[in-house]
Image (cartoon, rainbow, N blue to C red; front, side, top):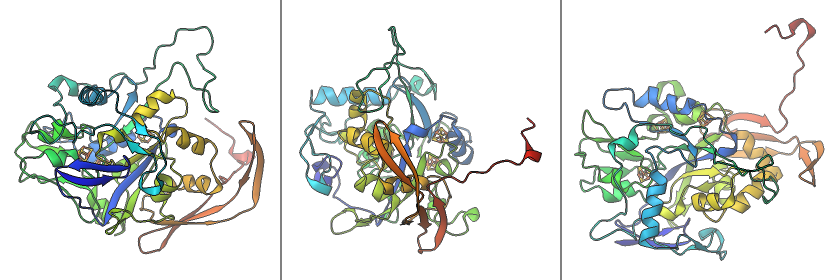
Length: 417
Ligand code: SF4
Ligand code: SF4
Ligand code: SF4
C-alpha cells in the first residue's frame, strides 16, 4: 500500500497505488434543497447509455429518497456497518482547523482501504441480485412522527428541523480521486483519465469478476447480464471533451446535468496542480468557489476515503446527526452559509442550469441595491449584481442577473387555461 493525501480527511491514507492525479478533475455540485425528484436526469442517462439488453437494471444516475430508499437497496447502511464493525466508534473528525489542506480537521477512523480484511485491498460487500430489484423503493417515504404538533422541532440553527422528514439524494459515479473500483480490479481494467479524471472500465480487459462492484462503496459499477462484463457511468466524456455533434465543439455538461429540471446541478472541470497534487487555487471557477472557498457543498460519505468528486449542498430541514454522518463535519457551516449567502455566493448560485456549456470562470459586476429585507431576524440587502460566465477559451457564454426579470402579461393575453 502507498500513502496518498486525502484533503477531505485532512490526512494521508493508505491506497494500493501511488498517488497520481489528472490535469483536470471532473466535478459537480448538487443542491439537494432544490431537487423535486422528477427523475428527468435518470431518464436522460437511461435513454442515452443504458437502453440495451442486459442493462435493464442499470441506472447510472438515480435519485433515491432518504433515509429509507437506496439503489441497490441499503447500499450505504451496509457499508457504514462494515466500517463501524472494523473500527468501532471512530467515524469522526478531530475538529481542529488546518487551513485549505484539511478544512474539516482530521478523520480519526479507518477508510475502506485501511479497514480491508486479510489480503483484500478494499472493505466492501457484493450486493445480492434482489438488492437491484427496485430502483426507487420507498420514494417519498418520510420518517415516522408520532406527536401532537406539526412535527416541527425548534432546535435547528434557524430553519426548524422537521421531526418527520425525507429528502432526495441524487447519485452518479463520483469519479473519485482514489477510486475503490480501480483499486480492487485484479485485471487492471479500470482507469482514471489523465485529461479529466473520469473513471472508465476498459471493456476489452474486464472479465466480469465484479470485484469493483464489491469494492465501490457507492455501488456505482454494474454488471451486464448479457455480456457478463462491468459497465458504469462514463461521465458522458464525449460531451465533456466537446466532441458530441450537438455541442458545437466546446466542453459541454453531461446528459444528466444538462437536463435537470429543478436546476440543482452544476458540473465542470477543476484544474489540478501537479506540484501540490490538489485542486489548483482557482477562485473564479464556480466549482472551486462552492467547494473550497464558500464550503457550501460537501462530499458524500467522505469517511469511505475515495475522495468523491460530486458535492452536495445539504438539505436544511433534516436532523443534523444524520447529515453529519452522510456529509461529514462541514454540515453546520454549509447550511449556515447557504441560508445566509454572501453577495458572491448569491451570484454564483444563479449560474446553475443557465447553459449546457461548461463554465470555467465567472466574473461579477456589482449592481444597484434591489431590496432591504428581514431574513430570519437579520437585516439583509440584496443587490442586483450581474454575473458573466466564461468558457474554456475565455469566451463569454452568457450573463445573468441576481434579480429575475419580471414581466406583466398584457390584458389581451390573460390566462385562458
Ligand atoms: S432532474 Fe434535477 S430536479 Fe429532477 S430528479 Fe434529477 S436532480 Fe432532481
Ligand atoms: S463512485 Fe465507485 S465506481 Fe465511481 S469512481 Fe468511485 S469507486 Fe469507482
Ligand atoms: S454523467 Fe452521463 S453517463 Fe454518467 S450518470 Fe450522468 S448521464 Fe449517465
